[in-house]
Length: 204
Image 1 (cartoon, rainbow, N blue to C red):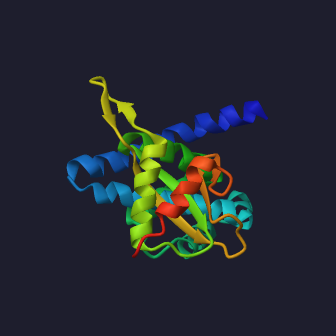
Image 2: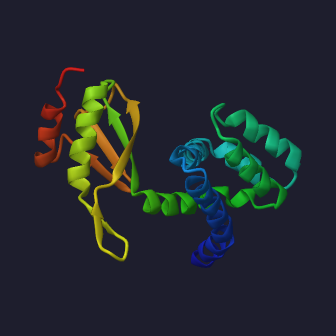
């Protein structure tokens, strides 16, 4: 198992690096960070889709299904807003018979991108839809909770940029559940974080 993981990581590395360099090139040459961020959001959405739809992964790794059909299903599954850069990259993985490694390639790319832009995706599950004002208050509190990061040879200290992924669960007990990477925080169980629920009772 460990051997397979190492092999998969080695196969994924050059592809995730290629996508990262593509995004970085757009970021630097076009002087438009939104192009890079769009790829990041595309890949984040793709990871969510793959993990929520095992049948899609099974379809993509099936050697009996033609590359043409795999491209068709990918096109149908991706959001309309997905950038052409992302679509071309996924088609490349299909052509090079590397689409079966798409999840680890995507996750490795996200790790590189997060580190570069000091960006953290935070999943929020709440019992009700958060207003814009509540989202801003939550982001401010999360930046304090996560703390500053030290980057660069000159010891540049900066707080992370936070992108929220919001979901409403009426059956959820406790108000909020926050997922940051592999960490899950239940605000109803943490004394310090219970105060956050009160702070979010602001007018939209």
